Amino acid sequence: MALEIAPGSRIPIDVLAREIGVSQTPVREALTRLEREGLVRKEHLIGYSAAPQWTRKQFEDLYAFRLLLEPEGARLAAQNMTPTALRDLEAVAADMEHGEGPVDRTTRYSRFARADAHFHDEILKIAGNEVIRSTLSGQHVHLHIFRLMFNTRVTQEALEEHESLLDAFRAGDPRAAMDAMREHVERSRDRLLMAFE
Ligand SMILES: [Zn+2]
Image (cartoon, rainbow, N blue to C red):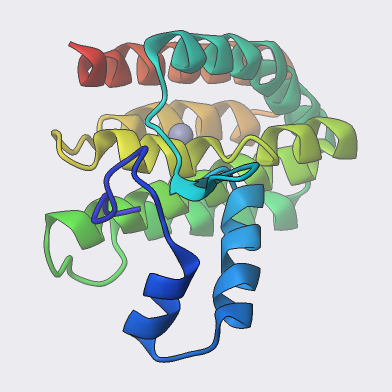
């Protein structure tokens, strides 16, 4: 996540196991898990390596995909919204703004990225379409955004956009929720495109 192992570089299991002082089995298991999350890659006869950073094409494809699913997810969530679900969602949003004092830039961004992932997932949970939710979560969007942005500017502009989404949910307006989510994902895409310049 923190790019200490450079994207694309090899991760030899034996070296890693020796460094950590454990046998190869837990290291192998951990790498298998990371492979599922898209953080490492396994190649036949070569072994594991740190996943390369997203290319601009991958990034744009993924955002096109988000734009297909997330506005619809927000629309469904607005339809299904209950006072309890809204309260929970507001708590998740508040977590992004406040929380504990940031230790440093990295911790702050990591917390922000995780909280944002949680906020988006919570909306899809309320939307109630498990296919949409699991398909999106399988892409580990926020994890890759975190890696991509690790060495660049931290942005919290998203908070205002989340607030307009919450307004639409409070008003029980599916159309407005859909529009607010579309705008949020589009703006997020435009902000992150900087990483490729
Ligand atoms: Zn967001």
